[in-house]
Amino acid sequence: MPTYEYRCEKCQELFTVVMSMAEHDQDRVECPRCQGKQVTQQFSVFYAKTRKKS
Image (cartoon, rainbow, N blue to C red; front, side):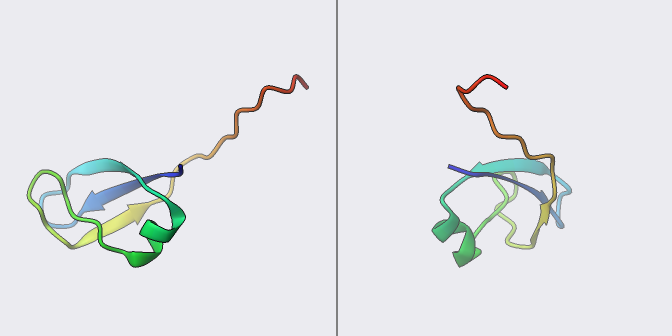
């Protein structure tokens, strides 16, 4: 499942949420620290890990 990073606009807490793409599309994320609903998704580095050797 994809991992998404967010920042709460109320308390400035950075947090990570693991959820499906369908859940992400619903946009119902809240801050785990203050339960604020004004959160902004942060863009982070993405990498894929495979079993295949390059």
